[in-house]
Image 1 (tube, helix red, strand yellow):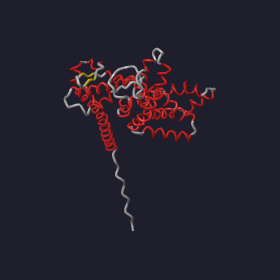
Image 2: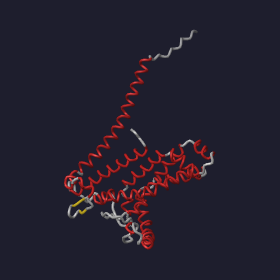
Image 3: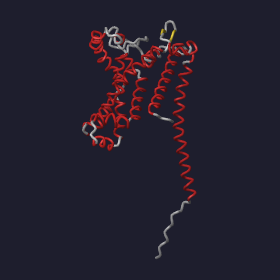
Image 4: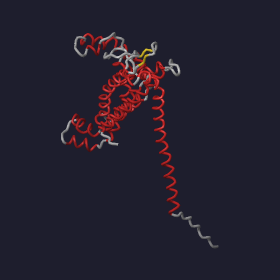
Length: 322
């Protein structure tokens, strides 16, 4: 009995194989290109929506709308400076408090803490970053606001009310709400995000650099400032910008603790407002086509420009050329 010869596998020509790879590459490029184009369309749509919606406010009040400190729905007079001032100051306070906290926590987790403790604390930081913002707002309202009203501001007024320069930052009735309270709540919100990013950046740093510095007799302080900070500068700036971006647009947590008064003043303990909190509170009460609604949309447009400006500043600090 003779066996039939085995069938030879079909040979695929080089040209057919190249054509299939070319078709796959073309399809892949089309998919990823479409995704990037979708991002640009969404971003452009947001800018156009805010700009077109706020054009009545810009036509009525001119470009000076951004620097008017009046917000009076009764007289139909609106300006963006009061909420913009509150947004900028509360964000700066939050970032200034959160940056050293996040940096210290990230450095401790990656360079000092034992691995088991570092894993537990790192998980806790990630869980804290997942807490909804409204929970931070409720915590701030029931904890931080009474503490500021009963202890912090009275202490500051008692000891520093006659000090030039400081007295203007602490005067006012002890309500507990204000820019400082909002800044503290924002700091607690953005610190976990900044810590997580800085921790990843520090973990990516080659261990040989640290060990070499320690071998030359450097202290932990020297290693931190002369090795870790220069090497991680770009990632640290990215973490700070990430936290700043969330602080600029935070709504509910700030609404609970800032007092929601559209006024301009340097007292950190007086009730103020932010762009996001003002939009959240007054948007449902603004009729379609009204000047009030147009002013709120103009506020959103200015807030987007402020976010773009902060991102551009971060790129300049990082030294990006592209």
